[in-house]
Length: 165
Image (cartoon, rainbow, N blue to C red; front, side):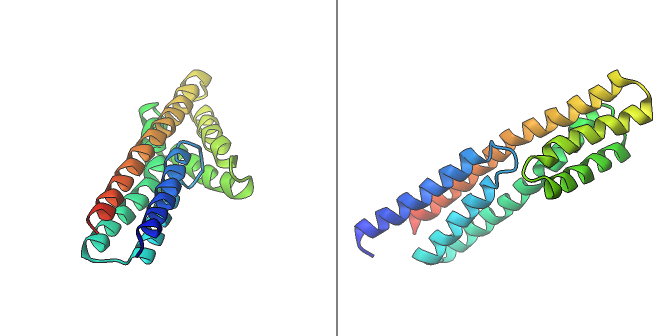
């Protein structure tokens, strides 16, 4: 492969990875999937050797973990805010339904609202319900930073792959 083409492939790959990385800070933007797709396309173009296959597997696992980390962290945050498990489950279902019915921000509104309403009904105390709401949103906000960190690790793994190919 000529050096100019190699540089072009490298440049385009890192560009899309950085778009995915900073996009991961935007709610419901599939930033980690974009990083993963850039790595996949890079592998298809330059070829998968042993190191590339191993690192791409790690990149894939990180992408999958990053895809569920926000749900896990929202649940943990709501639980720390004293929400009942059934309220958390209702909030997660509302988040999924809200995203499907009113993409891309329906879930962002539906999940916290659902945990607040479920806890308001359960506890009959708006301050306690607000604590559960705050816990859920704090956990979700923290998950944005975790996804960003996962994206950085994905890009670093790809950089090792690109360096040693």
